[in-house]
Image 1 (cartoon, rainbow, N blue to C red):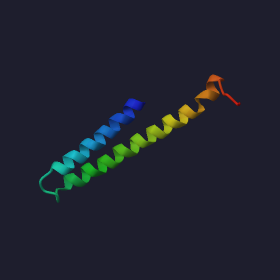
Image 2 (cartoon, rainbow, N blue to C red):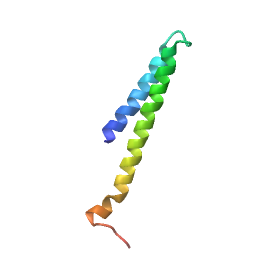
Image 3 (cartoon, one colour):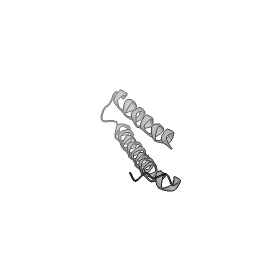
Length: 68
């Protein structure tokens, strides 16, 4: 899942790079690319939050919770 989150971040960066490289800044494709970048970032964030939550409850599952 970490790899998938990283993939989403990479795709978001790529969308922004393409949008920045377009000559005509009034091109509707730029808006779509930026929207896609936001969506990729959102998906990456959701995965990262899920991974963090899973990591925080893993000690409970493994029975290795240290209460000292």
